[in-house]
Structure formats: structure tokens, C-alpha cells
Image 1: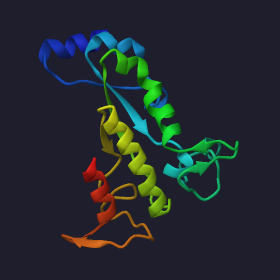
Image 2: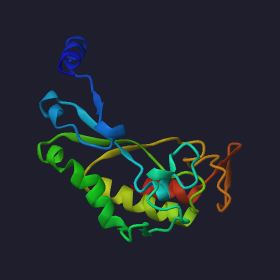
Image 3: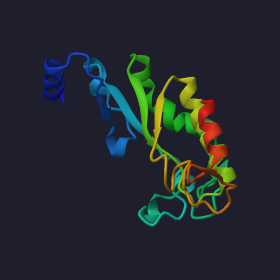
Length: 177
């Protein structure tokens, strides 16, 4: 990693470089502290909310197979709520935050099979926490099953926007943060 960063900096000393976390971007990499990089993470916890019924996710990765709610009680009787998200997201990166490393949620979102009200409540907790600690974020997609356009959610009152189906409530929530 150090060799790669050195080579990039030789070409462009001011280049903003992002480094993905370990375990599919979920765990902090303490070895980047001195490299001047942005640590990138993911915002997909709990998967029982973010990926409800997603066929590409192994069933063993879901905290519960019950229909999602927010807050969520998983199969071990543990509650997922804003406080749990703080522990899972923010506290996991505390060592980097305390050393001044910038953090960016490089992808996040909620699959279109999660009820809209649950999605928005979960999103608001995530966005408020990330704003609180100064993290940037990027949704998995703007248009499609995780996005604000053409998501094909069955429980949304869409608004026509230049030939696309706009989820105005989700857009306004994102704009607040």
C-alpha cells in the first residue's frame, strides 16, 4: 500500500486517495493512518433491513429472516437501533477518527423490498450519525433498486421527474443531511 501511495503522490501530490476497509469495507485499517488517505466503509447494517429478500446475500448473513422493522429485533433478541448503529459504524472507526483520518461511507442503501417507512427511518438514523461525525457518503445507486429514482418500490407514491419515477420522500431526507 505504501508503495502504491508513494507512486500516486509522485504523479499528483494532492490526489485524494480512498482506501477500502477490510472485510468488504466494514473494518478499519489502522495501517493507513500515516498515509493521508480517506478510509472508505459501507453502510449495510443490519442486512435484515438493508438487503431484505436480496437473493445474492447468503441467508446466514441476515440477522433475522422476519420482515424488517426499524428498530429491528434480531433472532438473538438483540435490538438494532440508532445506538446500535453508532456502535457498529462509528465506534468501529473510533481509532482512525481520533487520529484525524477522514472516513467516507463509500456505498450504502436499502434494497427496494424493505418497506418504505422502515427504509426511511433507518436511513435517517444512518445519515444523522454520519453527519454528526463529519463523514461523507455515497449511495449504492441513485437510480435503481437502492435509489431515489426508478426503485420499483411497491409502497411509494412516485412523482414523475423527466420520465423517471422519483421517490420524493427519500430525496428530501437525503437532502436534509
